[in-house]
Image (tube, rainbow, N blue to C red; front, side, top):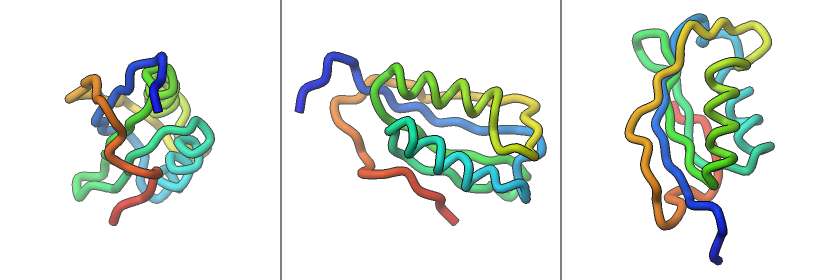
Length: 99
């Protein structure tokens, strides 16, 4: 399968009130709606971390959602993105919550 858009992979960490507010569930939902793959999980320091992969445009939409939207009762203070790179193929078949 060849795509016109390059595939991107990016790791993220979301800071703020993002645990105990269904953040992971909403993230999984949004990722599936957008058609990106990867994972999300809570960290021991009260943040949410994960990885998103997909066409650049869709990954950018997800980055925007992770930075500005989140779950209805969350409060996003800041989101950091790192290890952003172009990939030749997706490493995941779907998006899920890790524990």
